[in-house]
Length: 85
Picture (cartoon, rainbow, N blue to C red):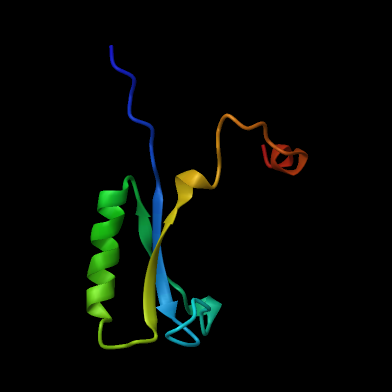
């Protein structure tokens, strides 16, 4: 029996930047959360659609965040993480 493929969640989000040369959002409250996707391919497809939709606005930028990299399940939780359980 083969081992199941681990879930690799990705978040696609974007918004208007302060400057086209920086990655600082103009208004954090206006960030557009496109969605969370089960793999990079699906996230890339969603990112590409949003990037193409806003291609005429140099200050609009979309990103893919690798959520699966934020937490390593093999690493013991910190005391503050344990409080949320």
